[in-house]
Amino acid sequence: MRCEKIKSMLADLLDQTLSVQEEREVKEHLALCEGCSSEYLKLKRADDLLRETVCQMMAEIEVPDDLNRKIEKAMDGGRNKKSPESRLTALFIVPAAAAVLLLTIISAAALNYFNFFSPSKQADMALSEPNSGGKNTTQNEDSVIVSREDLARSDSVMEEQDLRIETGDTGASGEPARLTKQAAPSVNDPPGPDSRELLSTESTPVNHPDVDEVDALDKTKTDFPQAFPLEYTPCPPVGHSFKGAGGGDGKGGTLEQAAREVGFYPARPEYLPPGAQLREIRWLSGTVYQNYLIGEQYIEISHRRLEAADIEQVWSAEAIKIEINGMPAALTENPPEAGDDFSRERISVCWRQDQWIFTVSGNITVEEIIKVALFLK
Amino acid sequence: MGMLGEGILSEEQLIEMAKSGDQQAFAQLVQRYTADAYRTAFMVLRDRQEVEDVVQEAFLISYRKLKTFRMDSSFKTWLYRIVVNLCYDRLRKINRESAAFHKLATNFGSGNGDMADIDSRIDLKEIISSLSPEHRLVLTLYYKMDFSVRKVAEILGIPTGTVKSRLNSARNLIKDRLERGHEYAL
Image (cartoon, rainbow over all chains, first blue to last red; front, side, top):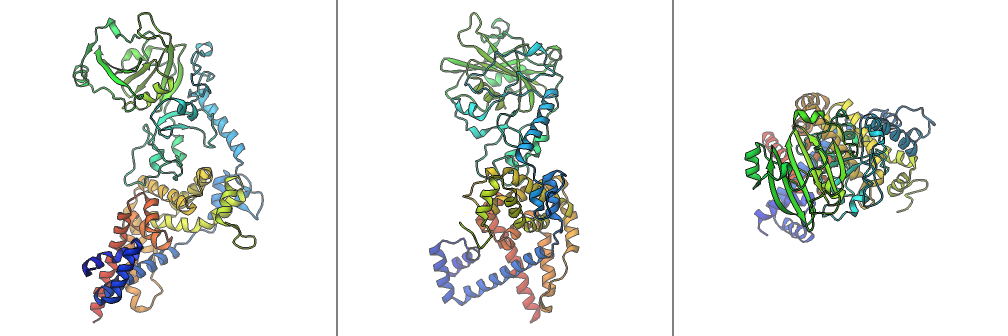
């Protein structure tokens, strides 16, 4: 090899990132070339000095004697120590006890502030379960938690990991969950910021390692969204017809035309069920409707500005309270209406995000409806 | 996998036991890594309170998430990713880069080498101190923690080329200074 090329590989030789053959060739050259050999020795000396300096700097850092004890304390949460021989172990919280404690806290919070979407073990959700007494403030019997297994059964191209169901810190399944979109993690990788990033929370850190997986940094789970007054719902009255609000007066056209007419760019679905084809885009009275067909089924997305009148509405008695990307949402199930082209029940999810009102409805599975809602941009 | 010696468990054994809920096993695991984790975090953050918080939180998280750890990857790598991510979080929040540099410049005393090297040694520490936190991290993980280039890249979530570039720039800086020093001696 020529000296110029060899010299460009000397750093790789030091880093041990050469292939076996390359390393052999470089070493053979160094044995014969005094110039390259001298250059390598200079680089090696700098490398050794750098290593020595870094190690010295590290050795000069004093580690507190009580660090292990402080870790114990942090893990124990301040309980008394059991034994001096194994202080770290003595103070660990029993996982089961922690689970009970955490569940109690979450349930108490849920009673006052949150309504979660709780799991049903069948593919079809028990959507007809009514609110007890029609009051929403203190009861969560009607809340349903979606389990990953339920979602995985749905016929979707989206990876299960793409949708994070936040459970309690103990990781127990079946706990009240929020539905939040999350960048898809890979299973075994350690926790990191990207993976814990929720759409509704902090912005992406710059230069951050792509540490996927588990929201290991679970501290973001403490950033619960502010609760809306439960008498508030932005959802349109039950009975919205697919054929068009206002008796079919809605104009049809492209998304750009709709945007010009209504004065805002309509949200686009980042996820649609496999095989979905855009059927029509309409707008009427400031609302843009996007209709998609999936075979013989449909899904409709509506997007409009929040209005003062929205504040006056109350939760529909049949609505199930869930959260979409941290915002309270109402999920309703309606029988097919006379004149509808479809015979299956229509499921709707409606929520407010900032100054917008979104609705995703259709006669596909509830899991698909929710996925579309979660990934509406 | 097997006993390293009488009464001494291998790391794999400790991890398996800890995953099954053996708190004492986890405690032994923690004790092997606490000091170096603290020092690594200190190389980045330069604030003792911040570093203590990071280390505590790192072990809390690793304890909670141990069930997700698979034995086909290195526990040390996995743990250091947690530590590094927490350090980045802190840096982002507190944004103390310049303050940390000034603090560090007074924290590191002179080396114990022979007199001919002592000036360059202090100078080297200052040079390293003046680097960006990520650059310092690369050097720390590679030179002190003995992670390979590939592992450093994995922990920091950056390409291996970036890691090599960081190592090379530090080496070349020192090589140039050594060459100039040699010239002065003449």
